Length: 310
Figure 1: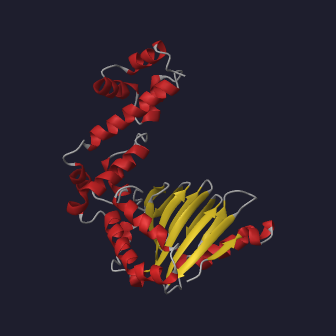
Figure 2 (figure 1 turned 90 degrees about the vertical axis):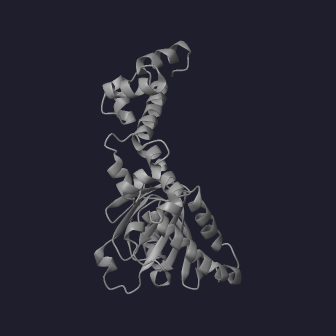
Figure 3 (figure 1 turned 135 degrees about the vertical axis):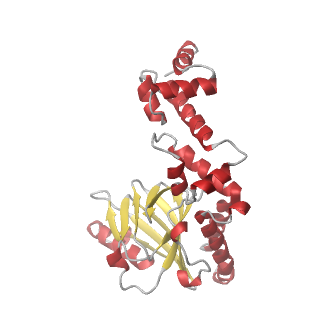
């Protein structure tokens, strides 16, 4: 096993974009890559082959990536791409789902179906390319484009996978079967299966999504369930015994409203309400007072009296 590194710095700047497209296609699967900046694009890939399992670390500038039916047609091999976000953020869509890749998160992509990725800022990522023939789990539809958080059980998987490319050949190859087993388990988590044994993990995923998207006024249980790759029934079962879905959403929105009332003292309450995920100022007023004991106006005046507003 030998690690090989390629970089756009190896070619003339005018050739960097074409070189990067060819490099991505050769390392992973055939895709259409379009840099989001007109000039100055840079990218680097360090790749290790572990008996057919590819472990690649890449760092690059903003770009969009598309794989469509035309590129898939004629290819005999199917791969699972396990994407571990190291820095920066990305948006991945497949099978009608969209998921945000935050640092530390793990997300699977099926190369036999169309998908899209977009990175609006510079980013680094670890990608494990696994032939689907080596997977025990072949039905990948429910497991793709579902971001697993970097903490908790999925964090154990990402830590293990991240270390594969740093080991010497014999040791790394010996660990490949264990890596495939962990990937299979993570695929099950992403699909929301085995809930009874992984309720805590599913609950953590739902709560993380709520923290990220509570400011969306259109957010509801159906949307969250679909984004997390579980059914509405599974969502409510996972939250049983803890704070309800509606209560969590209201609390997170009130917390966001408190932040805005402190940071934006000149904003009208209806603007604060909309930016916090509430349908209007009246809904914000009711939820805010129920949770804090004071109205948004009283809270803001209190901030001013204590000199904590900006």
